[in-house]
Image: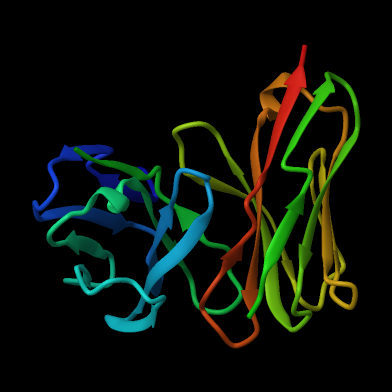
Amino acid sequence: DTAVSQTPKYLVTQMGNDKSIKCEQNLGHDTMYWYKQDSKKFLKIMFSYNNKELIINETVPNRFSPKSPDKAHLNLHINSLELGDSAVYFCASREQGGAPQHFGDGTRLSIL
Amino acid sequence: KQEVTQIPAALSVPEGENLVLNCSFTDSAIYNLQWFRQDPGKGLTSLLLIQSSQREQTSGRLNASLDKSSGRSTLYIAASQPGDSATYLCAVRPHNNNDMRFGAGTRLTVKP
């Protein structure tokens, strides 16, 4: 009964490939996020989706595209992977208003 | 632009000590502030959420305070235990904005 689940947990792939990371939340939350945590452990927001509407895109390259088939899912698709994309990517969700965010366990992406 | 700083970057204490982790933010106009815990290779676990109208929140051995005017929050951990060893992250949600800004975290080690 995991609240926010991401798959895969680990992803190792070669530069130039296209890959997707899936995220699902069973909390009924309205807003979902994608964060990137770099090697220095600094978390930066990438995207926010509220009722299928993109709210925030923090200067992320257009090789990254979030896709939300429904309110419970926010997948992250990455084209033409680069070495600098190696990081841990976290999905999160939140109710409306001032509610706390709930995070998934992360997907560790390694580019060879 | 909101910047969040956490001091110290790392802290090592013997078991049983009370300790304080610090978080400062540059823009006092915030919606709320959230403290998280991150264990190695894991996602973030929400510890405490303080709304902008509140001054503190408590959960068990944890107490978080908020002083918006000075742009500071502290996380107080009483009677620390080895199981408290983790990285503690502070995140600020700016007013009327979905975005959350994270500090770089404080890595806490509690020695038995």
